[in-house]
Image 1 (cartoon, rainbow, N blue to C red):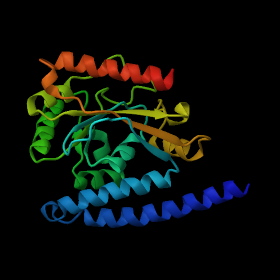
Image 2 (image 1 turned 180 degrees about the horizontal axis):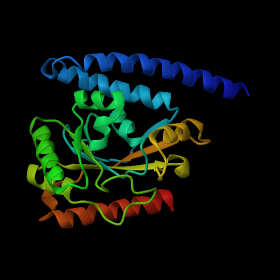
Image 3 (image 1 turned 180 degrees about the vertical axis):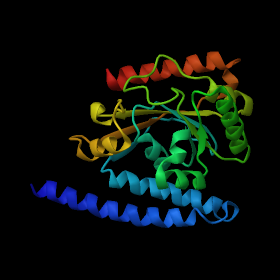
Length: 249
């Protein structure tokens, strides 16, 4: 009982912190983008860390990589839940690529826009092509990006295939891919399944009996090993199936 009361009190404090920080970021988002760009991105990552705490998730980074992580990379990850949208920026200095619907999510959309999040309409080839150009531009500026190659939340198991976008961009720019395998120990509580809303998912995160989220980081993959995006894609997809067998089966 004491643990339960203590946890509730802790979450309340975290939500108050998050609310105050959110209001501050929302107000700052109205300033000219050229004035706040770099500082706002750093604040956005701190905001994501506050969000992780408010959700009560025990976020764990497991460094399975042998080689040092380079300064620039294209992070890819499986996408079983909504939590990755804050979990990845909380851990990694990356500009996320998200679905275009996020742009219209109340205050969250405006904060993401000001932070430099890249948006794509997944069902539109034209939008995907535009997003690819924006990603290439972001990489040309020396930044890193995060992409979900499954093309959305596809469930707790690796989807049957990955989209080629991340691999095509990696080949064209020469920027390596950093694979991150995401494993939630309470898979059912974290998995985003219709008709769950974002509010439903947040409630599940905060009330789960096992709040552990494991983010496994592996060595970057050099695009020079591959002659085309299909071979590159298959190689990486096979790796994710191996990690799935190791951690989920």
